[in-house]
Image (tube, rainbow, N blue to C red; front, side, top):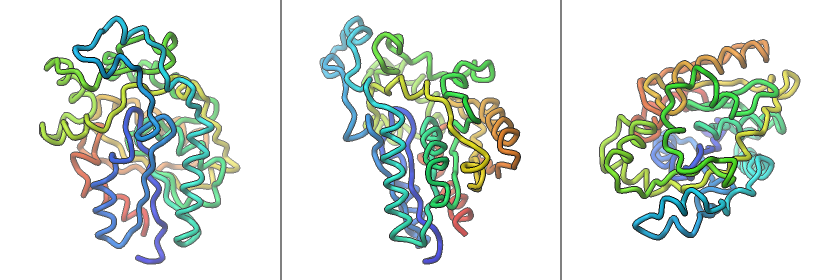
Length: 283
């Protein structure tokens, strides 16, 4: 499939590029290229409060220490991903397929609006796909997201410390199980432990307040796909459906929907099935 566009993968909140390792390997086996990066404020770029590394954790300090990650902006993330798209397009057929998970969907929308002619398709994997003027925080607070488990994991008020903060190093069995239910209820303990090892604690709060910039004239030209995860307890199935409907109304077109009986992390629980969907889009 040498003529197919390569993929650029955008991870979600608290994650890093390792999110996509299994999927990229599966795509490589199909002669498809994939590139995943750490967003500004994530992975190798993540900054974390000093108290996070001291165990047992001082919960009061963890709730008060300002986040060193708070200054990360959506503009920085948009630029980083746009650069990756340009690089993939240059080494391939002139375009890239842009894939985002969860909050990474917001960055997908910003990039597709900025450089629509370099995007062969925008793919949202249980992700925030929002119409013009709507910030992610508005969807997070929407009634259709009332059953989402993620806000119950926060260790501090985001406006006060500048980040959405979660203790992914917690050894509290009940708390660890709530994390698993939120993100990957359909994976085994070994895979869950590996996933936890790649999560940073502070997701910059200001990025969820940035409104979606999409327009029919630019973003609307890009074919869009949504991977709907029916067992998701981070971005609820009802929330996913509402975003699809809102975007279709705003853009005057139809989002192509692919369904997986999966939790919020199909790249862990069903990487082959997700790669099959992506390979089909590439064709």
